[in-house]
Image 1 (cartoon, rainbow, N blue to C red):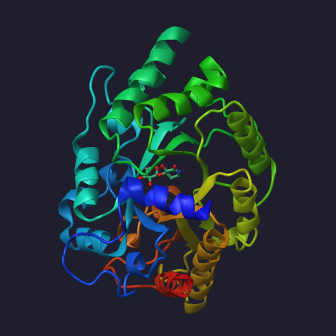
Image 2: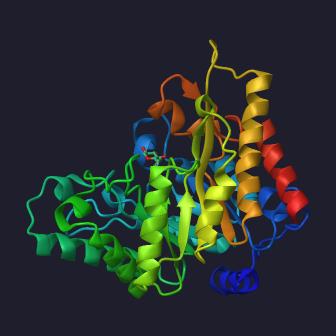
Length: 359
Ligand code: XIL
């Protein structure tokens, strides 16, 4: 299975080394230190919370940022630029500009792309949330959105987060999800089928946070995965976002959670890793906090490395400069692996070291 997985992956996204000049196998960057069958990714900053910040769109305007993005990573995930509110702002209008640019950047730099996301309760446009539609209309809106967006990037997306955050903490379907609420949970299987029709080579994922420890939510995903596989629905992977906070302890059971999905024959992935902490007065983390953070990052990497078919490891931004954390979790921060000026924290070196050892 591992051998097949590697060759299938390479067939889709090509070898990890980019065409551009420079020695990319020297183990001095995250992407070059990684084992061949593991993509190292980051979110690409833009849209979402960035729009309200006092800086221009990072991906388009921050040259040093783009340099690090190309140098360190072999996979990119649009942080917001493929979400409904961004890419489908009006019922009969799509906005592909930023998503196209990211996919082009990825191609030029030998990077895979993780598409994010198709079926979610959040960041949907007002026309969808507030519109009145019959069930048949809503179904056809979802279907044509998936055909249009997935179809546009056919052959260029390594993995799609088809369904994002569909269960609550008790393992119940989230009723905030308009499609699930109005059409019933069977719509999840349809979303996977439509995505597969639109891009037969993309690996199709379930993705959520709060699945780093066993519990009702993980149980719900395991039951759903079994059900979808039994019905021959094209489900290929299960991912933990891994938005961690040092308030809740180390993710020391993650490997065993991922293993449960690996055992079903699925790929697994880490898709949005960050590790936030309570900032001391003055806003600067202590040396001890940075060591703990580094350890959490390393534990998540090691969990992915311990599982046969964990093939993608993505951090949710690489610099604190653009992290969503301070905006969404007041008093917490410093969650990424680099400071604002792109200098490296212990967490960066912990990942680099872990990857080198795994090569
Ligand atoms: C976040 C982005 O980082 C922000 O820019 C945006 O304002 C809100 O969404 N789970 C997900 C991601 O699946 O899409 C979210 O990203 C973080 C939580």
